[in-house]
Image 1: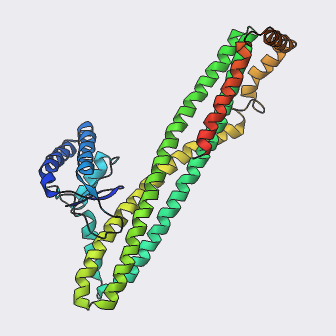
Image 2 (image 1 turned 135 degrees about the horizontal axis):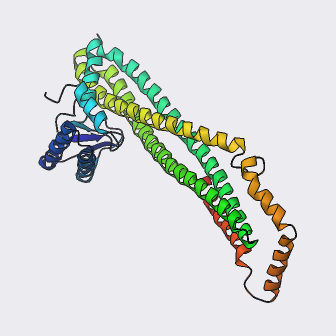
Length: 92
Length: 257
């Protein structure tokens, strides 16, 4: 799966890594929903680190869309929440 | 993990649906890409300008800080601890500003690096898109083009969305820092930090001049005697020179970037 970290570019992550990343993604969403800034910052950092270390950077001239787009490391909880809301992807 | 994936793709597909002949949108999109590329490059230049301005201010503030330290040293050598204390407390206030500016300087450098890399990535993708565009126009029928263009579009529009937000971020940060840099420029221009022109700063220098009178000569004589005697030069005076050497090293550090 191709993953974009906003502001950093795209990496290709092997599908076998996805379950571990999914766990962090769930934690991140939980932090966003409960408005827990500390947990959000920590979990986002951990998720991005995991993607960076598991992923192989894509050449800059590829035109492949990402299967997943992750926020920039400095994004705030509010920004990420707004991004998700725009698309109505968070149920409830 | 699937929840965040659709943000830019949705926008790209919407743009594509609107066009009657998808091939027509290729040139339009390419035009937009070139515009964005220009914008990123201007962004890099803007951040670099702000960074250089900050470096100039840092050098000025550090110069003032060194001057105050020398004044403190001199006041102490002349037995005026009160005056030395005043000079050093002003220096401490100045140092706080220096530290603050150094943090901002790091922030701007980080933004500059990020935008430079973003410009490189976008350039590579725009080039790839141009090649793909020409191939599609030359080779494929409208029906085939639909799919091909869809793929090329989603790749590039994702990058464009990302870069657009990165520029926005950098602009916001630069604007914040520029407001603060403007305040410091005013402070420097007002002479409040400059003992040549400002009354606020002048008092320590004036008092030192007044009390030193012939004392400078005495201190210099002492120093020469010590040198001739082969002893170490008087610390109070030599210390200032060492700091100046250190100061010019700091200036070099900022100039070279």
